[in-house]
Length: 285
Image 1: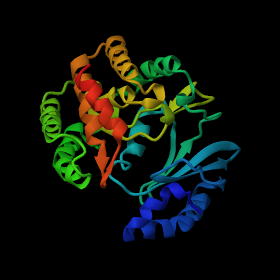
Image 2 (image 1 turned 180 degrees about the horizontal axis):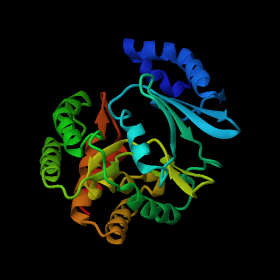
Image 3 (image 1 turned 120 degrees about the vertical axis):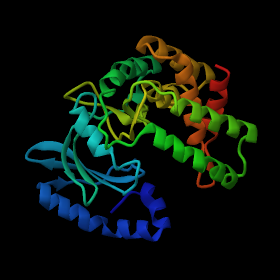
């Protein structure tokens, strides 16, 4: 019923119950929203995502595994109103179910050349930086969680970086979070695989992880987006181009991208070497 990418959810009793309930939830939502459901997409890691038809229209049914990072997605999509992102058509809060506009043909931006991908990102980002509802979690609160979790994750992952670098990351994040500029809606998971070609607009964002924070932080996931080029030169060039063309503080963008790379660089005992490598590049940029 569900793709193997969701197998990790079965590690907990709560997750196993959610997976067990999925067939019933899909049937309930199909009846509630009058959907003809297709086979699930295979590349989702935190939600069950299925193509569907409703009244002759192509739509997507997304049932989220309940998690604090996914909870604000519906509110962010509602706030964007289809300007740069897929439209939210329906939302069942109790079941964490979203009915979304479907992107067709749906090719990922990562399939384009790095230069073309950057052109799209530079056009897309300012449209997403709108006033953020108070219900969207703040970047400051997210940073506070990182600071608490980083030492624990560091030990669990076998000390994958120097302790001095860990301490520098924590100090940097504290300083950045306490000195932010204007707060807008930012997406900490904006990358080339989460922007799809569409018919209503050439490119639309899917699967956001929204926060309420400053614009410079909003550059972090794009700077680290290996789909747009994975060399040191690629990373630094993205930093330079984004900061210059969007009129933002390069130093704050650089250090946010550094801190974000380390914060997402190790968790659950696993290490993402590419994140650590990019963080080191950014320190010297």
